[in-house]
Length: 125
Picture 1 (cartoon, rainbow, N blue to C red):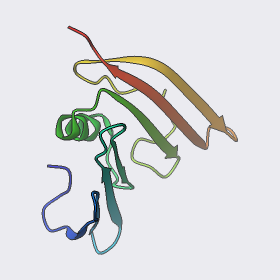
Picture 2 (cartoon, helix red, strand yellow):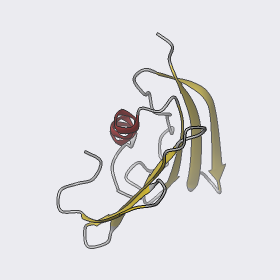
Picture 3 (cartoon, rainbow, N blue to C red):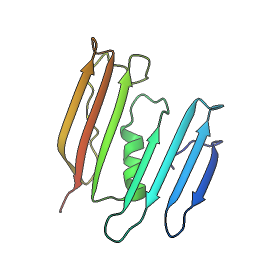
Picture 4 (spheres, rainbow, N blue to C red):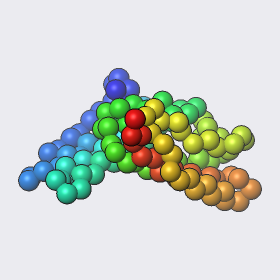
């Protein structure tokens, strides 16, 4: 389950292939967007939200469990008004079954705004 109960959802299937979903919750305070393009040579799926939560790690686990990609990139934008805040260290998610291959962390201002990007690859167990 990627979105909370009571979310308003609009979805669309594209020809010849593709899917797009936009959702809103909390009277428009939070949004979710999913785009999927299944192609034999390179499939693509994206998930984006501004949902406020103390950590995105659980949500990232649910998204990964839904799509089961071989490779993925997470990008987190964190400011002083977010539930995560920038008071402590911004830690990368630990994703079950995946190795983190790279991490970029940029702090802007006096750590008022942080962007973290992490690349993961499915473990060959």
